[in-house]
Image (cartoon, rainbow, N blue to C red; front, side):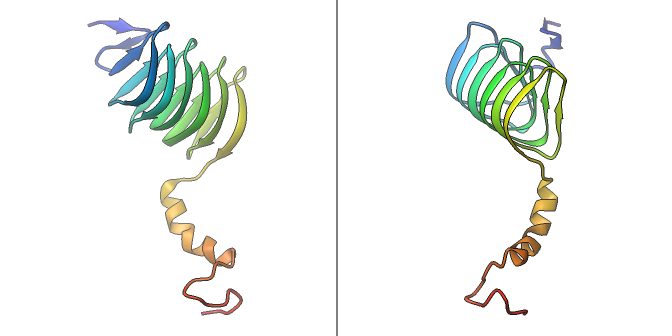
Length: 142
């Protein structure tokens, strides 16, 4: 069994090594490790790893993101985002869980909400904001 940067080929579905440049949309299953340059969009239900030499400028939508390299853009994860020591992240983050190791740089904004809680609280939040539905007066109780 082949090992790539500490992962077996069974775990790692894709690997973009240093010196590799990709522009466009990347979709993958299981786990993708990026140590090269990516510009565009990255989509998966699973794990994205941006290694030490990884340089990503993209819209990222995945299950989990573990970042040690550079990322610029928007990162939305269904499970969690990890900013590891050495990471340089300038992005908008959206995930139910976030961890930032000492030595990681983060500049941007972060929203932490669990998707199931967000959907359940939506009607209540709309009432609190005074949202008018069906032409009614927001000050009127129904």
